[in-house]
Amino acid sequence: MMDDSFAFSLLDRFVNFILIVLGAYLLALGLGRGKKIVRPRGVTVFGVLLIALSIDQILGYRDFPYYYFMFHQLPYPSILARYCLSLVSRGCVVFLGVGLLQMKSWARRWTLCLGLLLLVGFPWKHPITVFINLAELTEQRFPGGLVIDPWIGYVFYVGLDILFAVFMLFYFSHPTVKRRFLS
Image (cartoon, rainbow, N blue to C red; front, side, top):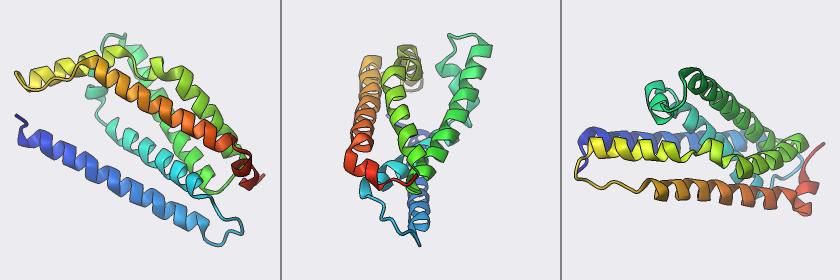
């Protein structure tokens, strides 16, 4: 059975994510005002998602002990380097999302690179050991409760990344979308 602090944590994360999405959408509306080019709806969706998901992950990384726990099999300097790289890469993706919302062609090209990187980089981004660690943590917090097989979480998150990357690659490589971007 879930304790109240865990339920509150989930609700807090959900509310924060909704607020981030709303903020990113308001940014999209603000960047779209006064522009002569109409932004396709798909560009807005991808731009808002890239911004919102990255900011949500940056906020989640505020808990370094939790990040450390997920990767505790690695040496401490490797964990710290991975942590810094994760934060910097999320910041770059926020910048990329803003570029998409401004319909910049460099942002479209880098979005295609991001899609390819997601396809080939999922073993680094989602190592199975992280899901095993999280399953152990869940079992410790809720003994006798529902513990999800780590492979189910792994396949779910890797599948989401692959689907997102494939949709992104397909959408931003389409000739009609490519023509809409500025130089």
